Image (cartoon, rainbow, N blue to C red):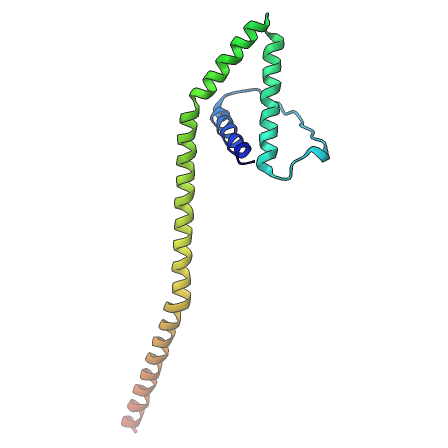
Length: 147
């Protein structure tokens, strides 16, 4: 199962690199039987990508003048995809690093808020109450002197 998710991740990374490619804006529905639909979204993406790549390979093989030429096209496409693998791994690592940094910053911010709410605000309220008592005491002293 872990291998499938890793493969799905690599395929997803490959698709993400192709997102800047201009293609016609056509949509095609993809239907999966209910009994064959996996519950895990990563596994569903994996199956979708494998199915799409299988459909693309079938199309290349069917449109090639000969089976050998179709296999040559597929080998070239596979070599190109595999050569991009290291770049894709680096990009995925960079994204994961940024996600980890963002999570760390969010945790630190949460701790800062908790510290403020649990320690600083009660401490400030105590100090404000003490100053109000002092002010009240000074006012009484001034009123007594004035009388």
